[in-house]
Structure formats: structure tokens, C-alpha cells
Figure 1: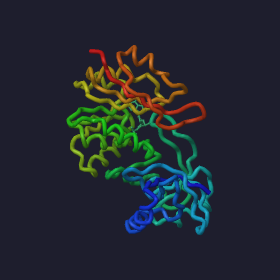
Figure 2: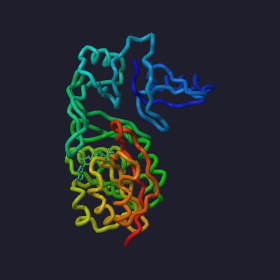
Figure 3: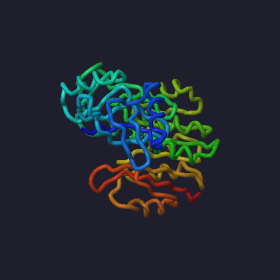
Figure 4: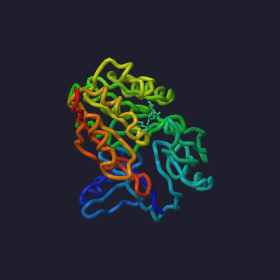
Length: 305
Ligand code: SAM
């Protein structure tokens, strides 16, 4: 039985020391086996943290096998509707308060999913720790993906101190709050009122002073915002190039746009980006989506006035 979970990679000789430290912190996921990968060991942890990677672990042979699931904060998400398995899962980890079954895929304008609660508290709301920030999320009300944490750190590493940033599809604010560390101002906009409500909570609980949450349709931002930004994040992968003209309008010459898109071939949006006056600095695969389709990110430099 394999389980997807966050893991911390350490050199094999440091494995036992790290395992003991994680046990002391209550962070080790003791239901899963430690993975060996060449000279490294990967230790399963209950929550995402600095330098964690998403891995497939084997369930521990001494423990009763648990049904396949994904852990996000205090919620376990199962792909099968198995109430008995859900009860076992709930009993297996003190950190879990709810086990849900995902009834469908992420869908609709707000990019949310429908869930049935199988065990525990009747809620889809939980708290997630990511690189020192705590995010309140509600999976049924607003989009959140813990798997984008590496991407958030990658972009943070590119931000120059004092930049102004616009997050056009900000959700509950994970990119905005992460990037606020280096920026002078992050305008974080979303169309979903529930996402903006959670973002306000997240800004307050992380004591962030330079994120401006905004309930707005990204199509209208050019008419509302009086500034040109140094950097723009566009994380609405299914929208294709529809919102790119608005982003080019709002980005200063020499500024950067990080454009996420679902693609089925490399360079799919290259011609459109050049036509709008952009130079592609990099195109990377973020994650696979379906056979022959993947989420890509284009880092674009805006060249035109
Ligand atoms: N960036 C966030 C994150 O990483 O968690 C959320 C990304 S989610 C894939 C896309 C977000 O875009 C959703 O929260 C959705 O409500 C929002 N959205 C969809 N259409 C929009 C529009 N026209 N204007 C503004 N936001 C929109």
C-alpha cells in the first residue's frame, strides 16, 4: 500500500539523528516507511515544511494497512468512498480531524471540488503550515494546493527587495503572503468571495502588513489599478492566454510575468507571448495533469512600453 506524503531528504548517515528529532517534534509520520534513494533517506513527515518533497511511501508493515489518501493539514482526502477505511484512517493519526472523499475533480470558475465527509468533524476547513506560514483553507469553498509550495519558494527567490507584485488569481493568498517577505506591496486579487475571506484571515494571522486583498475579476484590473507592477503572478492554468493582455498592461517594461498554463506541447504559447511584447526567460513543467498534458510555467520579461 503506497501513500503520498511530504518527506524530508537527509544523507543516510544523518537519518537516525533526524528521525529522533522529528519524533521529538511530533512531526514524523510513523505510519509510513522511510524511503531510501541512493545515498539519501527520505523521512515521511505529517506536514509540509522547508525543503520537503512530495513522495510515494510504503505503509509501515507493522501497522494495519491504511487506505490510499492525501494528507492536507488535519484533513485526509480519499479517492475511494470507503467509510470503514476512513474510520481507520482517522484513528491512525492524532493530527487528523476529518476524512473526506473527493467526489469530483477541481472545477468551475472558483476551481473548487466537492467532498463528502466520511469520518470525523463535518468540515472541509483546516490549517496548513508552509515554510513558516499558517494558511486557513476550506477545500469546498476555495482553491488551495500544497503541491505549489516549491513553486512559491522558486518565485520568492527571484523577487528583488522592494518590488511591487500583483497576484491576479490569488485564492486564499499563499503566493501573495509568501512573496510579501521580499516585496514592498502585493496586490492579491480573486473573484471568489470565500477565497478573499480566507485570505483576510491568512494575512491577519501571519501578521502581514503589505498584502492588499481585492475582490475583483482579473479582466477589470487594468481599469481599476493605477500602477504598473514589477512582477505579476498568473496562476489560473486552465485559462490559456485569455488574461495575458491584461497582465502585459499592468506590468512595467522590464518587469516579469509568471504565467501558469495547461499545455500539451512545449512552446504552446510562445508565439502569443512574443506577439504581446514578451520574451520567454524560461518554460518549466510544474506537474503532470493527464496523459499528454501538463501544467507549465512561463517566466516572461515584458519588453514593450
Ligand atoms: N494562486 C492561488 C493558489 O495557488 O492557491 C489560487 C489559484 S486557483 C488555480 C485560481 C484562482 O483564480 C481561484 O481562486 C479562482 O477563484 C480565481 N479566478 C478564476 N477566474 C478569475 C477571474 N476572472 N478573476 C479573478 N480571479 C479568478
